[in-house]
Length: 227
Image (cartoon, rainbow, N blue to C red):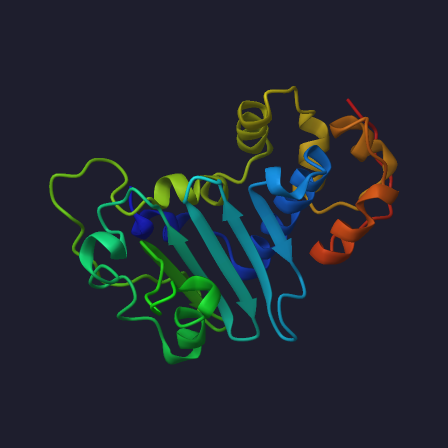
């Protein structure tokens, strides 16, 4: 599986934005300590943009910039044979077809190293008027198996957006039981309430999440019946 396969499985821009925001909210509840989280969402990344991000602490990461122009997705798998550090720059085709409207994202300092080299092994984009996600024309490396650009691993919870997939990931990552109904509630972008917070983490309250609610822009008034 490659970025080409993932692009076919992504939803529209608005649905992807909501899903990313919901995953960030779920992690804020499960892990009050910011450094322990993988997924985040900043609704105010700039004056005109929001950004979703993932970082596993081991060098793998992605960033998704949402703007009036559409959405730009950058992923980096540090062990991929397509790493710019293995090839003296981005792998041919990964960024070659990125349209001009997203070139500021390609060159964004947060997504490049100190030498200005884009830190990327997989890239997708979708302009506001497009009806599908696009990728570059890429000849993937030979003699690699399964996931040459890291896209299958990096974007697994974007391709499979089910509550069960997030529950499996969270239970493995945090080594605790995670309430499926609460996960479904948040992944549906339903308003947050004390009941859903307690179902996921009895140790915090809705008030404790004020900063995360503001940062993600998640709706926060509503009801919930825990399982």
